[in-house]
Structures are given as C-alpha cells and as structure tokens.
Image 1 (cartoon, rainbow, N blue to C red):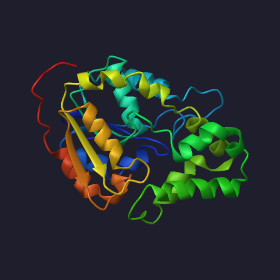
Image 2: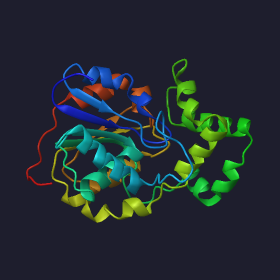
Image 3: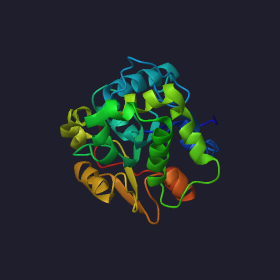
Image 4: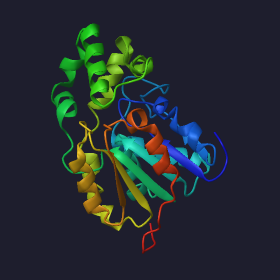
Length: 258
C-alpha cells in the first residue's frame, strides 16, 4: 500500500500481518509498505510437514523480496521476525537499506518460558482439550501486552489457532523455532554496517530489556530507544510512539558495507 521508498514489515509469533493494521496505513502516507503472513501463520497455508524453522522463514523472506523486486528496502521486524530478518541479511545475502528491530528474538539464550516447554513437550500440548488450548493461547497473548487489547483484537489474533487444524498449526510452528538457527549468525552481528534502530518496551515480559541490551552490545552503532509503559507488543501498547520512531530518519553509521 502507498507509494514512495519501500518498507517491509515482518511479524513474529503467534501473530500475523494483522498486527500492522494501524502501523502500515500510517507509514503508507509517505512510503510504499509491504506486509505478509509467514508460512503457517494468519492467512498463509497451515498443513502437516511444513518447515517452519527460522531458517526456512528466512529463505522464504529472501525469495519474497526477490518476487517483489525489492533490492534494498527498509525492513521493520518484531519478535521472531528479528531472527528471520537477521538470517536473511547475514546468511541469505539479501540487501536492506536500513533495519529496525523492536522487542525481537535475535540471539543468545532466548528459549525460555512457553518456547522451552513446547520444545520439550510438544506432543502433550498438541493433545490439550480445545478449551484448554484456547485458554493457553489467549493467556499468552495477554501476557504480551502491558495495557491490554482493544475490543475484538484478541479474537482476531486467536482466530488462526482455533479448531483442530489451528491447534496443530500453533504447536507445529512453536516446536520448530530454536536457538540453533540464531546461533549460526551471532558471530556476524558485529559486521552489520547498515543503519540499525532498536526499540524496546520497558515492560516487555516476553523478551525483557536485557535482550535489547544484549543485541545493542553486538551491534554497537545501532540506535537504542526505550518506550516506557509498554510491553512486548508496541503495536498495541504504544502505536503512536512506534510510528514516530519508524518515521524518524535513521542516521547512517560511520562505516559502510553490508
């Protein structure tokens, strides 16, 4: 949507492009905005046998950029979208104009909480009664916001994960998201020389502030901005502040390169 310099918005789990419903139109006033649903999420296909690893998502993202004819777009990523875009940049050879990462999985030891439990007991979660599964997903989604969802939003996020197929798809994707796929590029983070902006909610309970500090320590020239009173979902908790950051010009680092 929109016109101007391209910007691609990359969602994480267990979300979809619906997460950008307020952000994308605002950016489209001055930019050409691209949104999509990762395979297995939102309106994309959900089926047995899908490769839904971070490595697979990165390969898909690289091919999607080629399909769109985008050589150096701005990229904005959230949650596991951070790991996907970093793999795409560092291991798939894609070119970005600049990169904004907020409340993202990026590296280090991030297999914790629900991630870790599902990796250890995926078959148990897959057999949960429907009511228990839906309650778990709803609780997990609420845990990500500090201020709460507006009416109807929680149901929209829950919709792709309801029913027998949705429940299977939910645990299928979670059981394939692993640290091994971020460890492969961690040693390359210090080589990133394009403009990078990090934004983080101070009240993020999914990926607390130390994850922002870890990533900032790896990409030293990156800008780091904190948003007070906001949790993991800045799109829900502080959309106006997020848009203000996304429309501000990123300063170029001293060196040039990747």
